[in-house]
Image 1: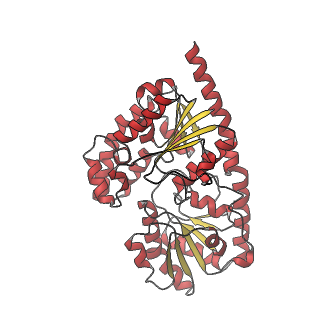
Image 2: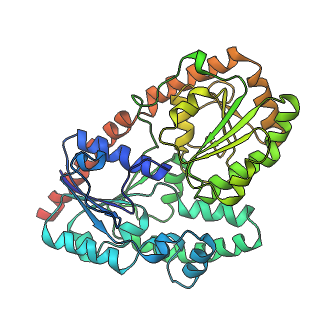
Length: 409
């Protein structure tokens, strides 16, 4: 098939779960022999021929992202989006320039399918082209469910902002649902929710996040540090930064009382000032962006997923499981992943229980090895990108075949 892939960013380097998902699916679609043209938001120079993304695509084209998409100040971006009739993500990342670039490509050549990452990119496809070419939307994470979480649990300002976005989402989802042919959701919970607003003629598929199981592999036991607790993530996203701060301030002190030599490593890009200041606390380390997270998984006696907000499936949890690093997680941290508490991961519901389970694992090497081995087996069976896209590929081909047949009749 000839596929136009729409992405707000070049999916490389792989800093952040969204980029990992985009790249993982892109890589496997390329391996299945599809011809790919990628339109990505960037102001950079053309990619060299040996760039990891360029290798996967026949062509990579750029569009200049809007000024709101480049803003680092979340408060400013939120206030700006509040004045828009569209919900936050569409107001921040969409716009006229994106639509014009999509139109320019589709006027110049035809495609068998448009694969849009995020609803705002599917929304930006001009309606007349949506009638000609099936659009497959990869939602990544349910915005509707996420705003409902903030409405229930956030502070007063966040709740008001969530309510505003939920009101806007109603019309936006209806418009997008009328243009797409299929939608990918990262968990069964999100698929069930999407059916409440997606028309019945639109295909809905659960396509979980995955891992490159050749890249993330278990490390030898001697590389482990019995006192190291690791959290990997991209901290430019609120729910990730909130998780790091909550764990450092609420859970780690409880662990430290029982294991005075314990160390907490906050690994990943875009730590804000509040996170950077955590490094002033004895035992807490903040690395910022690292070229490779695997050495941190290799050293980890325990990895943590202290998330209190979020939908979809957490890629960093999958990476930790693939790397043989035992995981202690909140229910949200491992939602959408087929794991059992006490068998593959340890699931906790409070700061006190979180600390207690970590202390237990730090002192129990045999349990750490057992959890790690069982978790790796789950990854190999269910969550490799090869398996996930291998299952998806025939569905995409059949969708295109059916749409082409419908046009002829």
